[in-house]
Image (cartoon, rainbow, N blue to C red; front, side, top):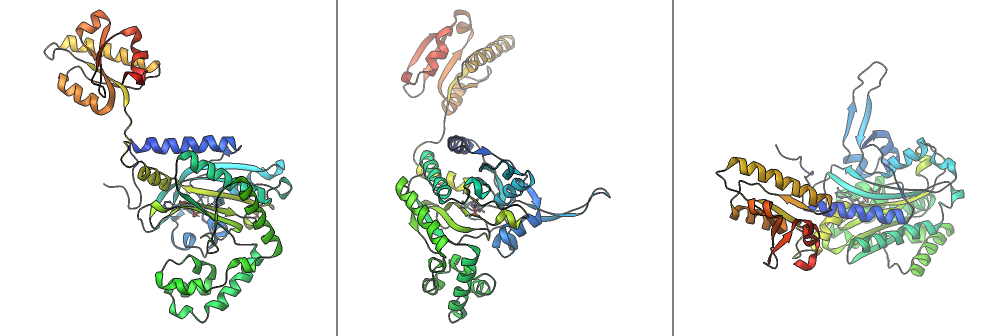
Length: 437
Ligand code: HAM
């Protein structure tokens, strides 16, 4: 049996990197006063159809959806979907729990798996993990303020820097209000009429159903046509223009670098005004480390109160890929502080039992003192113990009959080759000092 196409197992030592990324994200979120939300992995299909949009690629072709059969007369058969993203679920929870009633801004973050039936390739999987956050609340809490947009973007630049991601680029745009977008869609439709016949079949369909999506097209021969299309900035009303100008002014003041990208319209329908992506050159075709934006009408679309919001989701798989590529040449293998090698006479079974028991006691003592210990086996020969120890630990501690009697242990450091005699009482301190290397 194999893992299903587009899914994968994450194994050590790489999982240590995943944990480090998550710990750094939690730490940064806490400093910006975000709290964690955990929503279910599956939801009613209607949530995504209404929230993300029927016409989007995600909803129209990428969702894992099934009819969940009723198990009792009191239940109804229901169409359920593995979440392809987490914003719709967070807004559903915001409405369901009346989180807006406190009158305060809700700042929520999440870390977890998402599911999309896309064509798998480097950086694109059918189960992937997102680290995301949403800032949402009633307008009276300041949820519409461009300062919120700028603060989220500033937090992201801090987070990527603290993760050690080098060379990210922030692409920024405004897709305006829904009225602005309707105007822009009309302008696009009109401009597409004379050229769309020469464009790809997807664009021909998009020109009818959702002309904005034409801007996402990556087909090389379509690009000259797309370059001549009107830009959304020209369709923004005064309020949307003011909002965008205030966001960029706050980013300038904070010293967060960005580039304006008027083709950045994003693949989900709930966006209004600010949209953004952070890209990284090392990722190849799937170069978006993260994406997000404002969604001022989403709560109402889901039957909730007015609750403007802004948020983002980072592709954790892509953060890992980027960091691994940056570390190339550096070892990602981290080693235990010490390997305890009980060494006895293979012929003497009783002695081995005693040595193994003593080794477990020593390992327990050292682990309780905070050391990272690997435990060997008394039936191993000297060479086998050394080979195993060299692969997993920085140092080896030899525990034989003599050491057990005298309480003085033999420690060998693999990087310096130095061998030392250390009294048991001083062992923990000795093993933990990097200067002994
Ligand atoms: P999204 O752009 O669809 O936005 O996804 C955000 C990020 O998730 C992408 O930039 C990418 O890094 C990662 N990602 C998406 N699909 C895959 C995949 N198949 N394999 C690996 N990584 C992937 C959203 O999901 C919005 N909910 C973001 C948001 C939050 N907007 C407002 N709040």
